[in-house]
Length: 107
Image (cartoon, rainbow, N blue to C red; front, side, top):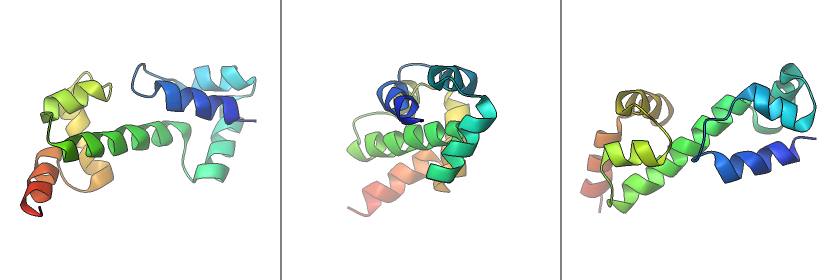
């Protein structure tokens, strides 16, 4: 039921802001049912799933050491680097700059 939504998310999570109402409409189901299916399959809401994808991608970009934190935030679709840093810390447990420092020092 949610396969088209997952495919859409995977193709677009960096390109555009994705809303839950849009995703539910894409499947022809209610928002509540979409959330229920997502929690059942992934253990999290669609929005959390999208954020997790963005943060995982951000980690990969930061590991490459080719981009600044601001550039990574922009690449991952964040308009505000401070909001990106706050979400990054919530998911990873450390700020992006500390994450980079730890990675560089562990090489």
